[in-house]
Length: 458
Image 1 (cartoon, rainbow, N blue to C red):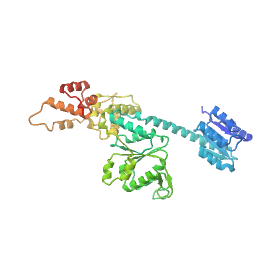
Image 2 (cartoon, one colour):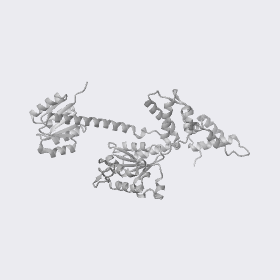
Image 3 (cartoon, rainbow, N blue to C red):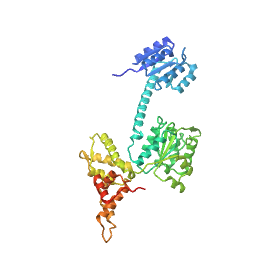
Image 4 (cartoon, rainbow, N blue to C red):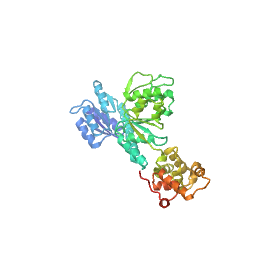
């Protein structure tokens, strides 16, 4: 059964109140009426109507004062101002304060119904947007980003410190390390979280369209510009603009980007009017910007403008402690999406994944887990689910025995050196080293005692 929407109509004209009540009630609304703002406030606090409609000229409390009172109680409430021709300026002022529409007297009942329907649609969209923002804020809380390794904890610490500020952030790291995910977390933990997050991949934009994509264009400014279009800077106004692969920009485009960052204003392609923008910039790259500056391929002044707070995300091979956590995370995610029960991961699979060098980083791990879940034929993910490259161990073994000396070796000496190298590689973390070597932790501890391998202190 459809729940009736409640409309509060406030006007000092009794006959107009009666006529409006009749028409809106006939249209299926629950209608409340009040003769002035004071009575309107009492009804509003008691019934919490979905839409408030108020005359602008009333005794005791005028429509503008009434609007301010309503917005102070509930900013989300839709408010329609009724105005006579002589008070249009006041109606425009009401729109600036927060009214969603205004309608002139004398008005037809159909015109009022259309205005109410529009207000209710806007209210529903805003409700959905608030819900989505809430979900996004929960999803992108720093503590929800998977990773407990020391390097990632330092990343989270720095990001959480800088998020509430307005400083420009430069995210550095190889492809697939999660730079955009971290950028979203910074945005949704910032003061601009109610504003938009606009990502732009500079490496994916044709060079001829970079200015249009960033700054927008006017109709007819170039072939194909069939209408006016706002650029990323305008769309991100009040929020965050994420410029990914920033190193791929040509020098002439870098000049225009630098000016926009310095002046906080942009001009659309083919236009003359400048537009002020208030936004936060987060840039990212997988290249060495300092080296590009030395080579003359990236402007030094733009580099320093972007590199206010640099944060480097480590490659997955340098944070292998996090692999088991990431596996659990992706396992839960893809099993839920596919509608299958939660699968188990064989220990041999974990061992193979821990030994892999992960050139594609977290993105490659995520894709690997999605594949495994898709082709698993039992309730477990087995080594057979993995791509062949994970099961090719022959080349590793060959590399270890290629340089055997003619006089032979002592097997225990080789074992000692391999274990020592594995401990150093994994920062003497015994659990990670054991998985790396494909043995149990107890076996590793026994062999460390056997060979006198203890962590070397500086």
